[in-house]
Image 1 (cartoon, rainbow, N blue to C red):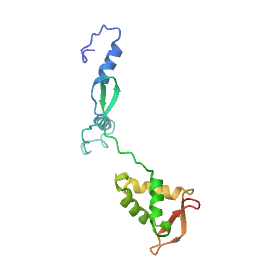
Image 2: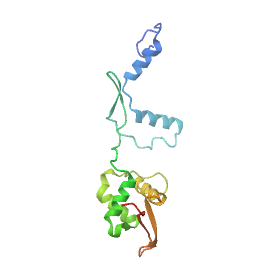
Image 3: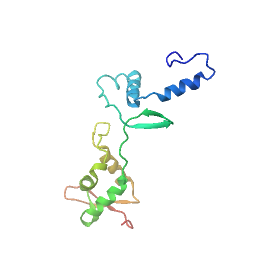
Image 4: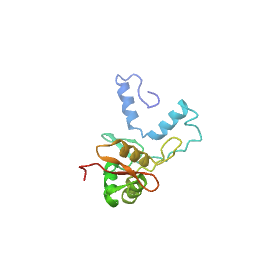
Length: 162
């Protein structure tokens, strides 16, 4: 009550504190970084890169906002749609994973998540996602028994998919 300048004898103290808290601007990313540093000093320590101040705002109700981290742009197409479009652009509508990657970068470069995947491989998230989707979605994509001259697998759209 003292922190927010409220009377401690108020019958609605909890709701007043809640309203005062909601009216404050909070940088959620900074709060999470501090929490990580306290819970996992080695993971969230001083060596961790500081995130830029956020600029997006989320509406909480009448005349209240809360600072939030910037939102990523939403993709208009899924990675599966992008893979299909890339395969349609390739000769004979089939190609290796690298050829599919190249077509996707040309056509959809601004929509791809270029952050590096965690772990030892350090590949862009979008490439790991494409590899997983094309290998596991047998309804939409087919892995041919044929390989290119370098021995790389060739993928194509599944039968009945145009």
